[in-house]
Image 1 (tube, rainbow, N blue to C red):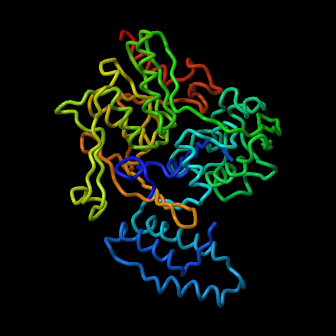
Image 2 (image 1 turned 180 degrees about the vertical axis):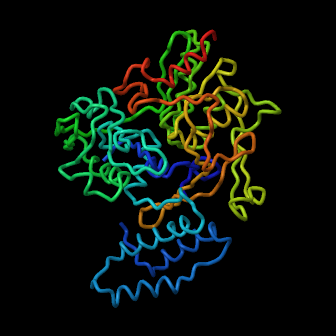
Image 3 (image 1 turned 90 degrees about the vertical axis):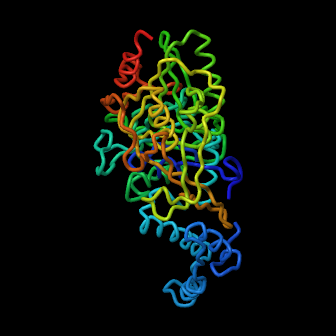
Length: 448
């Protein structure tokens, strides 16, 4: 189990952005010991994990071993690598959770995916070029039930490799290193995930991207470099501090506090907290952010309540494990008028923050209904370097409600309008005047 926060467990809400968002896969593109299935080390792993899942019951190791031995002895292909068998078994456990318990967020991560997740949540993008990609449906933002058919470059970080190479926000990604996205999988989300692996590579080397810009097809070659990407950006609009949080990383709480202090010192009397397109991160980072805005009192005690080891998913009162994450004293922005901006890709930790600020009547929520992810995952590194990203808790807001599958409904619903209309700090972006949701937030704060 990953050591770190939360009493030895590092609590994470997303498996990775592509898995969490489902329809929209917005991911910054960054470019063993082989164990036989019947080995005692692997068997020990299975029985260490399954008590967490199955109430102490043991897996029938003999059936797993017999299946693998039959494959080794009689399968039509003479030699199936043990590493592939191990991966198949690990993936099968997760697929069972999906099929039997409708668990959307437990996930099997390869060693490379797990390494990338750790780097991303630390703000690092090694061997990266500084873009984010979003799937689209017929050139528009995808609605529920639609099948994505395009991978569009949604964000290009200013003065980073992709920007310097001439890649533009709105370019349609067609190929990476000569490999077309269409050949990388049956759906656009899978293609983006695999394309991200092709983009990553040694620092100082170039990666060739083919993009469609209007009617013109271009091939551009940014040079990979290691990037440290902040999770918090801010800017003043008159007396309103606009703060954009792109993820809940290990340093998000400290960064937000510092920028709040700077903005308030510059005369800010109101705050816009922009959580749009924020797929989540660490629970502790969400706790730290909420604590900057809410004073702990007898009636305002907890940011979120997490419940695990329930008898069934619909019976939270049966939970054997209950964790209440308290509001921390010392917040620096406790009284200013405030708006939280959200959209359908505000997920997980973003929803914890939104629900807490809404339930405590600390902020008005503007935008569109959030994604609806009300669970927490913990990482269990596996002996072969891969990772079991396991759902261990459901979380509940201060009002005691879950947002799983339903999301947080804004106080004021405002559509963004055309795709690409969202204002983004420190990236290629349309002007703030064209962002309908941001303008609605600014209008609501007039006079504060």
